[in-house]
Length: 53
Image 1 (tube, rainbow, N blue to C red):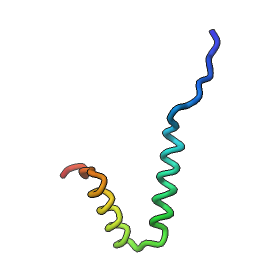
Image 2: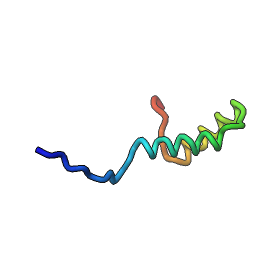
Image 3: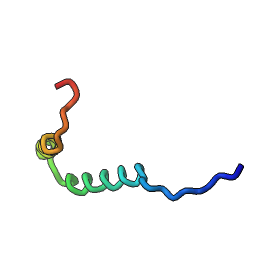
């Protein structure tokens, strides 16, 4: 049997790297306190609920 090469419709690794690079560039010069505020605001605006709450 031959394997047919299919073009990827969705590349999860590529997406994860792009998101990680975006976050890194947004937070690169932040202090720890600024980073905590950034993280809290992103969680609240994203509609996510932290584990255990």
